Length: 583
Image (cartoon, rainbow, N blue to C red; front, side, top):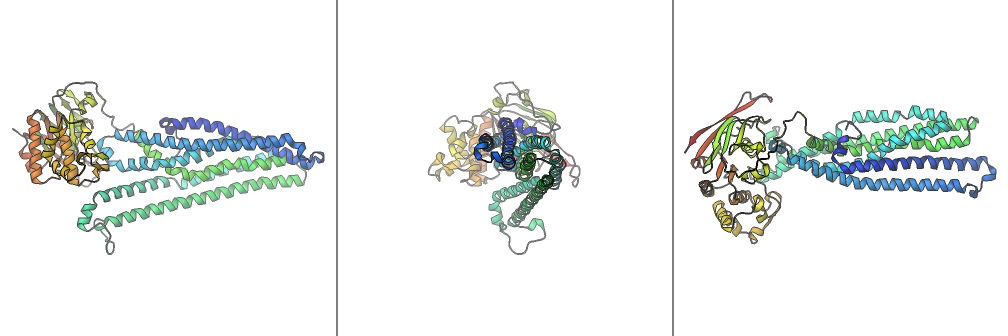
């Protein structure tokens, strides 16, 4: 991080602000204790040597009591600051994780999909590195800002020569720290990026493990092929792991070397002050009290800067993750503003008008000039080649993406002007990757709201074939599944999501490839159920390209896309849409 104290941290974490104020106060107390303790100790030592009549301990009761009180007060302030730092670290990490997760939930679907692994790494473990920043680096940084000027002023008042030597040598430590920072710049960010890539690869590997096992590609066999496409996933993950290992060890090596350099530099500077004091004491050019005071305080001037250098690397991983979190919490000003939330609340009939819809997307899956009318009582199918923007059009209808051109209206009201909660409570949406939460099957069924009754649930289960799945489960709807539906097969998860969509009492049904993982018989049953919901007055919109789905459509909207240049990564993508048939 370019700034040692990033103001964004104080904006997004209230605990950090309270902790910063307390740390400054405790650091001031520590600074005062250092000076007072050194003055008392130097007074006692110099007096014992130069004042024979005061060599008894009883002659220095007050000074020794002041010295003991200063030491105890410094220990108590340090302990309290460390305790506060650990508590504040846990609170700040929790606040930033919550804020980053909430901000990530507000990202547009395409951006969220592309950054899901980054968000998982940052929220899951990356921000925990901020504990080292708050517990070690920040207190050392505050002490480095307060202690050296005060202590140097005390030394200069009693011995200007030692003060001049320290004033000349002290800037060497920040200079070396800057050089080391320039050398290690980006190391933590690279390590976090390597961790993110490894996590992403592992997630994809585990998600596709059944397919890989079927193809015999789950492990590396024989010599590594030259073609990346022929390389096994296990070999790829091993390479990423080795790369992460090398980056981590390189960062540790630099941390140890930089700490050694700073320690040696500080030791040489203190030694230079000590030699100067010793020579002048031998020739009688200074008093013993001033020499002892300067000798006692000289290490205290360099100590905070050394601590900053030692703890700098420990905090970089957390601050690199914080940079990623801040990028989510504070998006670029040039980014397209989110669609404003509306205030219109009304009972929706489900008459959807899409007029000249155009959306710009980085990956090219965006329609341009899409026009269609979706009526209640009809099954409308958006069809077209892969990548033409069918799913993007659904997200615009949902209000998750703001159109760059054109409008989407529901019952004559533009979607951005509708009350989001009211609008979404009228929609049952089935995405390509249905969301299943950890918990019982019943909790997942009621994710869109409780169905009207058991008859509606039974009808939906019969339509999707999920009743047969329930018959194989001893606990039926009380069966517990894991994150993403772990415990159910891919087809069973699809059937459960379909059942949830059909059982939801909603007037608008949006389904993205609903029969992708079903056999022909199950597909026919699901399509019959969707047709029945449409005949009952619901607006049913399906994204599909199978002929069997097109056959039951009352309205077919063809979405097409053309890419102007295949090799240019900056090439533009355009598309069009038109109704090609209406019954």
